[in-house]
Amino acid sequence: MGGGNFGRRAVLDAAGGIRALGSEPAEDAAATKVVRAAGMNVTLVDTPFQQPLGWRSFAEVWRRQVRWARLRRVTFPLYFAPEILTSSLLPLLLGAYAAGAAKVSIGATLAVIALVWYGAEAILAHGARWRLSWLTPLAWIARDLLLPVLWVQGWTGSDFVWRGNEMDVTKSREEVRMPRTFRRSGSRASV
Picture 1 (spheres, rainbow, N blue to C red):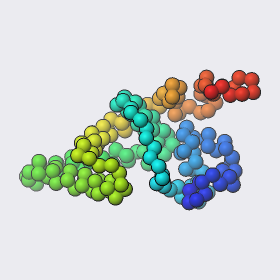
Picture 2 (cartoon, helix red, strand yellow):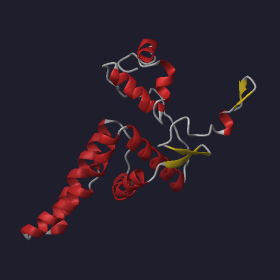
Picture 3 (cartoon, one colour):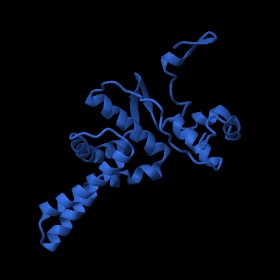
Picture 4 (cartoon, helix red, strand yellow):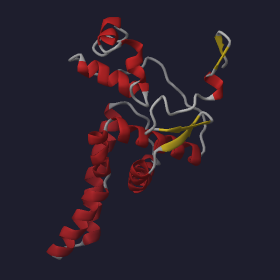
């Protein structure tokens, strides 16, 4: 669990055992909190292989993003709250206001801000060896336009459907009826 300790049982046992992973609506968030509580850091690593997700419709991708937003809001609210500031919209709006107040070209100001913002993102993406194409900046712009809508949906709801199961991020384990696919029948779990 972080820094070469992934899966170290002593860390999990000190936090209350495997039940600690069920203390949050998302087990990866719970694992992050367990690791941090043990005084360690969580780090991301490059995987040695691709992880293709396959084709997804816009609606499927949107529902997944809303689910993740609601989970982040519940598990890490102090990190979720400022996410609205991570798109280019605020710098562009402030730039337009400042340009108008200074009586300089709003269009030119917005172009410079967008060039700097998305240029920096392109440099970072290139450095991370992420796939870039001529459509990438259009995807970034679409993301930035959709982010406020996603952020509001993250705050205004708590339910979602995950793999056909209706769930609610604000309900405790005891309040949620176990999905049929995971109920025990006899001594074996039906999957």
